[in-house]
Length: 155
Image (tube, rainbow, N blue to C red; front, side, top):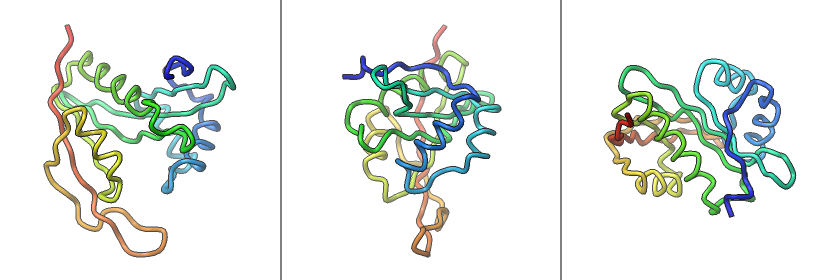
């Protein structure tokens, strides 16, 4: 089913479509300003539907020295469990290895058990938490789970 989706590097011209994807599929969306900043300063990929030519996924990541950090990954809420997130994560980890990174880093809301399970499939392990890191829309806070994995360098 993933052959109906084209994976490509994101460009600044994708900002509006990414913003729409974020608002429709992420309960805690980034602002369009943050999206634009990420598109200009980080490595970004999108998955685009080949049928309707609209975005169904976005991942943004950074690399510094031998570490790469997943900043955000989001997939269309109506297209979940089709392997789109896996495809984006694999692209990121392959890219990070090619950049000489030896470790992948991420943080995730502790309530996002689906994402945590997916990250574990890629070898991520919990290494810590940040207490009350995320604000909740209904008030209060939620802990962030910190995860890392070892990356294989590609030569």
